[in-house]
Structures are given as structure tokens and as C-alpha cells.
Image 1 (cartoon, rainbow, N blue to C red):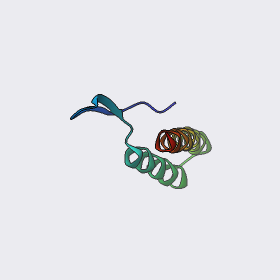
Image 2 (cartoon, rainbow, N blue to C red):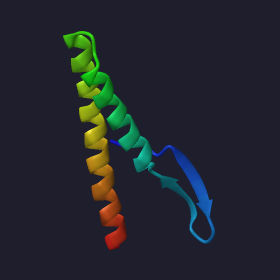
Image 3 (tube, one colour):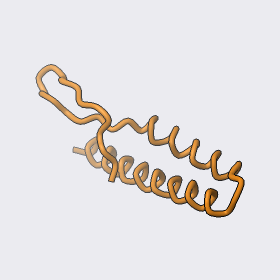
Image 4 (tube, helix red, strand yellow):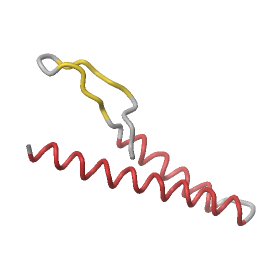
Length: 71
């Protein structure tokens, strides 16, 4: 599950968590790049698993964002 990187106080709404999708996309891309350039299978596998985890967090965040926008 994606966690907020920061919280910001907005006027009239109080403090709301902000999920930084750009951060998740950047980490996903770095993980894929590291997997592509890994020297051995265990390293490649570890980086691909990280990329899969980031992909899950991105998918969850997109669904959550869409649900909040529909309210």
C-alpha cells in the first residue's frame, strides 16, 4: 500500500496526506533500469520484485485518486 510522502495543510480542509505518484514512477523506472543492468540473476530478480511492488503501489494510488475524484 502506498504511503504519503508528506502532509500539507490546505486552507479550509485541514491537513491532508499527499501521495507523490511522481516519486513512485521514478522509483519504478530506476528499479527496471537496475534490473536491466544487473550483473547476476539474484540482483535482477530483486530489482524486478521492487519494480513489481512499485507497480502495485501506483495501481492502488491511481484507483484511490479516481475514487476521491468521483466523490
